[in-house]
Each structure stands twice: as C-alpha cells, then as structure tokens.
Image: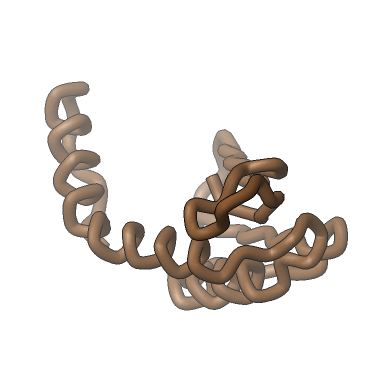
Length: 109
C-alpha cells in the first residue's frame, strides 16, 4: 500500500478515494462471499477466519476467539502517539437476500 504523504485535506481526500477505488472489487467480492455463506450469531466461524486471514496478510497481529467468534487486529506503529479503534459487528436480524423469509445472518459492517 502507498505511504501517506498528502498534506492538505483535499490531498488526503483524493488519496483515500484513490485507495478505496483500488480495493473496491476485492471488498465487493468479500461482501458477496459473506452474504452467500450466512452464519448465525455467535457461530460466524467462517467469517471470522476470513477476517483473520486478511488482517494477518496485511501484517496485523491477530487475536481470534474474542467474545467467542470475534477477531481483533492490532497494528503497532514505530512511534508513540494516538490510538485509533475500529469496531465491526454483525447485524443480527437482517433478511438474507437469498432467503424468502427473514432469517438472522452475521454480516460484517
């Protein structure tokens, strides 16, 4: 991935947009895969394994089994400073598009 070098908010916005466009097809494929293989709450082992593999491939330290099926990715920087946390959780009670009646399925946000 490119290093962040933009200085103005406009440059940062352009950099983020370009990075998002490079990842768009991959993210769409992940979403389709997750939706085509729904898992009930607290049984999202396949989805958790998918997330763990991708985080590990990006160089994150990965902890699995957090709160049963949760995954935590830790990226340690080389300098002290602020910490950012991002939380993704399943959306219980969603209607799976491939099912004729409502059924809960775990889906990453």
